[in-house]
Length: 219
Image 1 (spheres, one colour):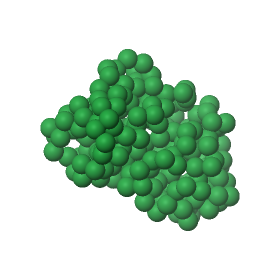
Image 2 (cartoon, one colour; image 1 turned 90 degrees about the vertical axis):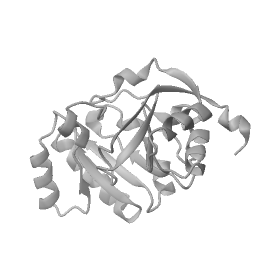
Image 3 (cartoon, one colour; image 1 turned 90 degrees about the horizontal axis):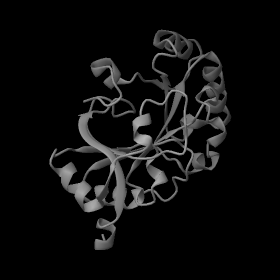
Image 4 (cartoon, one colour; image 1 turned 180 degrees about the horizontal axis):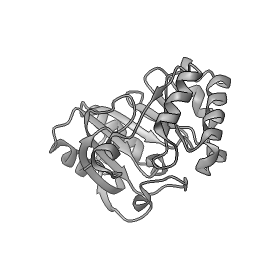
């Protein structure tokens, strides 16, 4: 890639090595690159520390730090990583370096320019998140079988809403869909029973890092 792309600067909250805590790659050792900043303020956010702070790093510097862990999988997350325009250059560089790359995004910003090699994990914000009006519905037409959709659910109303969206947009025909209970808000067993009762073709996920380490970081 052009050398100026390797010089591109991003504001980084942290880079760490842990197990993937959610998505279809749950449990896989992964390097996480958490970008600073997010335009959303979801009620259940567990990474509010990433709204501000961090340090400036070039794409080249980030690649060197990632390489120290010799990973197979890399996840770019936030905050909202796409809020930084140079996130696109970072994703491209990570793919070029040979990593299996995923992007965790709120679903509020355009995913159309993300490198096609990246697995895009796109949230659909529910009413209880407080940010449902920010959903960029145009993103749904851009998804493919390589990608994933995730709903974080806070209560039964969220579940019924998500079920309706699932059916209305035929989401499981686009890609895999996950339902996850908001930690401390919705009982996981209750959600499991609703999914089974309604025969929903979704994957139910718990946040593995919170089960193992009882925190948001997983390290």
